[in-house]
Amino acid sequence: MAATCVIGLQWGDEAKGKLVDLLAPRHDIVVRYQGGANAGHTVVSGSEVYKLHHIPSGILSGSIANVIAPGVVIEPSMLIREIEGLEARGIEPRKNLLISERAHIVMPWHFIEDKATNRAVVAGESIGTTNRGIGPCYRDKIGRTHAFRIADLMSDNLKAKVTDTVAAKLDVLRHIADPADLETLNADKIYDQCRVWAKSIGSLSIDSTNYLLDELDAGKSLLMEGAQGSLLDIDHGTYPFVTSSNASGVGVSAGSGVPARWINRVIGVTKAYSTRVGGGPFPTELSDETGQKIRDIGREYGTTTGRPRRCGWFDAVAVRYTARLSGVHYLSLMMMDVLSHFDSIQVCVAYDLRGQRITRFPCLAEDLRDCVPIYETMPGWNTDVSGVRKLEDFPLNARKYIERIEELISVPVGVLSVGPDREQTIFLI
Ligand code: GDP
Ligand code: IMO
Ligand code: MG
Image (cartoon, rainbow, N blue to C red; front, top):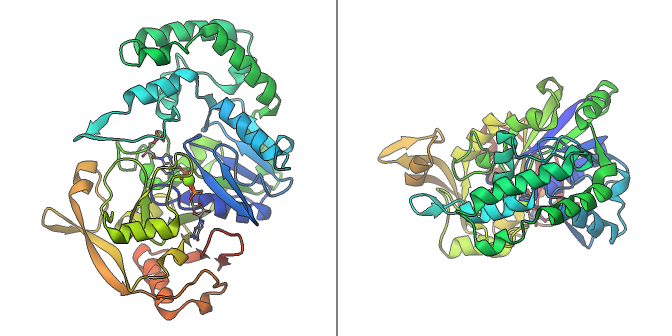
């Protein structure tokens, strides 16, 4: 037994939550290992819709363990609300949720910093973060001097550390932040808040690194739940229009503490088209009625922020890059139903970059911005496929589309999704 990874291959929201929920019963432990409350993972179970931000999407699968590993940044108030929200719906996350003592905490000043620094970074365009304090928290983690981890909530030194850090933060933030926001930075109040957090989630905290290594040695199988998507990876994505963690497959080991030798299957999740929320280059974006049609049919509005998602055709140049980067064995091709009613469908097979045809995903956002997609046009299937449950039952043109994607990415499709419900899924693996 070993570890299966579910990784987003685009700019997030590929429906990783749906796939993790479906695969969870085949595993012993589900692990979230990077990102934080910037993630919004939707699981649909019958008439119930769950939106998870920190808690792994295995939480609805009975008693299997769900671990929040060291690479995640946790906003405890939101995590507690998430736990209570599940409890109100009859789920008992406190029975099987474990939180790493090493995970860092998004502190109140991180929200203020996120707001104050979310300004234009390249040519008048801003990153458009989720305003969840993610970048500032990871910045302090790397900086080490003003970082708080879950273990700190239980430390005798907590009060002094909060007092010192609030003073240091005020020194810097008074030059860049809204003065009204700074009034909330009161050391005594923040210390009291930390005590409330410790009381609520302290008992869930463990040394998840040794726990997972022990469980692997004991033959248990792990399901690693990626957040965001590979194109938002801090090192390999469309920098600076990315998130602050390694959101591609390369981040699994660092964030979870599970060494690469245990990872034996990587499933890359991609929509049958593309979406992006926030700023940054997006070559196949459709700013016309076709883009709006995809947005309307796919209900493409952010799970975390409610922002309309930018929509466009499938970009095989980008997904080929991320499938290789993330070491993907199988594709999980989602939202096939959303393309049900098109006479023709475009697939981007190369870019024209200042007169040159390229098939290699460019390194610089400035270059990607200048890339004009070169499309291959495929006939649509103009048939509702949301009721399809077998590969053979897809219309011929839909099957041709699936085969073309496999060919362009050089990875077989292992899962197909034709709607948000669990039953609207075809497993070929
Ligand atoms: P995640 O962040 O990758 O987990 O994805 P999100 O939950 O943010 O966004 C995916 C959205 O698509 C959710 O609302 C899902 O319920 C929905 N969804 C999942 N699979 C399908 C599908 O095959 N078709 C359609 N129409 N919607 C889907
Ligand atoms: P899931 O896990 C889609 C985007 C933001 C912004 C950029 C940086 O649901 O797929 P951040 O708040 O992380 O500093 O924002 O990354 N972003 C996401 N887009 N899905 C997500 O998560 C995202 N998490 C962050 O919109 O462009
Ligand atoms: Mg999402």
